[in-house]
Amino acid sequence: MSERGSIGPVEARRQVFDAPLTLAAGTALPQWELAYETYGTLNAERSNAILVCHALSGHHHVAGWYADNPKNVGWWDNMIGPGKPIDTNRFFVVGVNNLGGCHGSTGPSTINPATGQPWGADFPVVTVTDWVKAQAQLADVLGIEQWAAVMGGSLGGMQALQWTIDLPGRVRHALVIAAAPKLTAENIAFNDVARQAILTDPDFHGGHFYRHDTRPTRGLRLARMLGHITYLSDDQMAEKFGRKRRPEAGSYGFGVEFEIESYLRYQGDKFAGWFDANTYLLMTKALDYFDPAEPFDGDLAAALAGARAKYLVVAFSTDWRFSPARSREIVNALVKNKHAVSYAEITSPHGHDGFLMDDRHYHAVVAAYMRNVET
Image (tube, rainbow, N blue to C red; front, side, top):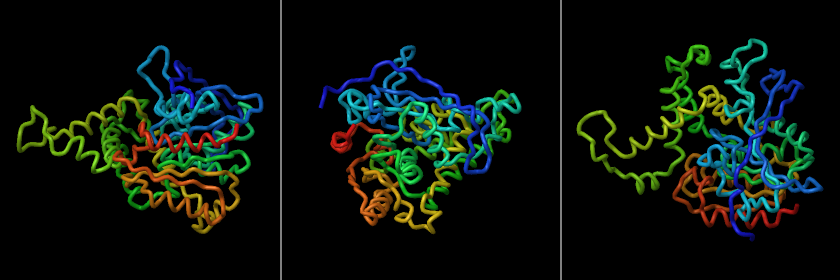
């Protein structure tokens, strides 16, 4: 493997689509755009392209940094770059901000051409199948007829799986990491509580808070705090925080006394300062609706029968949000169809966030798989 390095400074791009996009909900976006970034070089055969799909709070800035803000490093920079598991000396990598996002793609905070105001609550519900359709149109613009691989973690892994079902001829490999074939009732419940925190914030204004020059930061903060708890493992929280109290903590009150409380409030405040509340609602709903087996009477093997891709499925031992058992459901459905699939269960203390970590074993698994992906 070549020496590991950074991609270096990168630039975001935008692609405008003038043809309406009809969504699963039955509504259509009259004009829309996607923000994206690319890394590496597309080869002459246009056969070495990899699509990276982001998770709930992710975006198109996957690797490298921005020249005007070197601290703004891509969220999967440890995975993608020269000599890294996704080696940009070999592959042309595309990161996209999904429709409904808040980082440049058309979403609730962008202008609705029919009103001249931000879409807000009027932005239609989007699904994973809608994202696949939109991503495919971006691939058309880039001249990519078939992805060497589509990959992602969590909600991104669900998109990779959906690609192989909806457009089987356009993807050769799928890396489905820390994902599930559908949400459990418990996961849907977590999402609903998070949405209720936002919806009941007085500053939400029915989703049209932009018009009131305010933001539902309290609700978004609580939603993120709840979500963050589920992304971590109990062992990780015990090791990092335990029952440690802050030096300035008082006693017998309701202030911030324990270190874990301080950490969660910091994460909530930071997130509420940059993420859009309506986008959070849309992304969690897309998670809830994801169930590729539903049109097949709940039979995941039947849903995957027409797939042609080869798969790498990765799970993490302490991920209780999307447990290894859920990844094995995907593997079993693929095996029933005699599809080529590799499975790795990584021993990790990081819970669901394990897919973001620079874990030596995990990265070695991805690197080994990618070495066998032909370009």
